Structure formats: C-alpha cells, structure tokens
Amino acid sequence: MKPNPRKTYVYSYSFDENYSETVKYTGTDLGIDNWTGRDTDGDTYDYAYSEDKDGFIVGWQDGFISSTVPYPLKLNTKWTDDFYEDEDPITYVVTSMNKTITTPAGTFKNAIEIKTNFDTSEYYVQGVGLVLMLDTSVKLVDKIQELKKIY
Image (cartoon, rainbow, N blue to C red; front, side, top):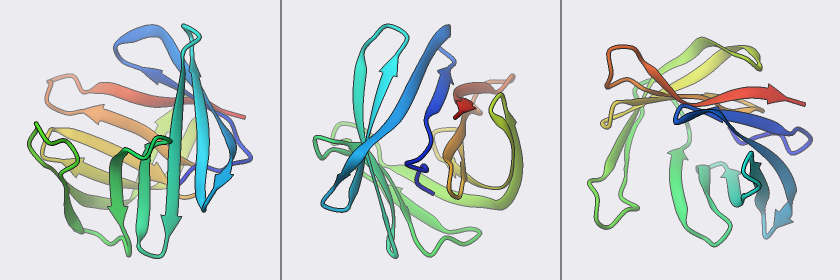
C-alpha cells in the first residue's frame, strides 16, 4: 500500500482549491522510505512509510506515527490507533477490497476502502498508496485529500 518510490505524487486538499502538495521519494533509512512534500506555499514536510508482512505504517520522519494498517488485510478487518494522547482513539474497518476510484490522476481499480469512526473514508491502491480521503460527515461528501497527478 505504500507509494512507488519511482513516482512523484501531487495531492490537492479541500481546504483551499489552489493548494497542492508534491511528494517525492528521498531515500531509505533503516528500511523506512523517506519522502518530502513541498506545498504551493513552498513549505516542506517529511514523511516516512514502512511496509512489511505485519502491515503498513505512515508517519513523519521524526518518528511520529500517524496511521497503521495491519496485515493480512481482509474485508471487515478492524483495528484501533491511539496515537494522539489528548484525543479519542481512531477505529478503522476495511469495508471493500475492490472499489473503483476516479481522481484527476486517473481511474484506480481494486482500491481498498477503509472507513473510520470519525466519518472519513480512505482509499488505497497497491503500488500507488493513498488516492483519496473523504469526509463523509457532510451531506455533500468532501474530498479531504485527492491524488491529482502521478508522474
């Protein structure tokens, strides 16, 4: 589920239609893939991805984990992350293993849909990573993060 290090990803975000982030692979350190994102304001963000037989981990290069996905991944797999001390834990459940998702970057088949107890849905594609994150708490679903381009 982690991104392809030979590709560059451009994401758009719902909070500002003119804002985007371009994310590039910058190397591997101790088995962890490092990526740097540069947004339209020129700010940079350092991400880290790790994937092995036990699961997929997303976080920051400073070691802070923001999300995990345990393997083996199956329909109705459920887990909880409690990374934020001052907030309620996040519960995730795999609700589909074969969604078709269309973003400006293309149409992706066999996307894995993961829903949370905070009314979000995330869509991952093997060899691509995250392609879409939705806020489903509103009547007209809001695209929190969307893959705009891959090159």
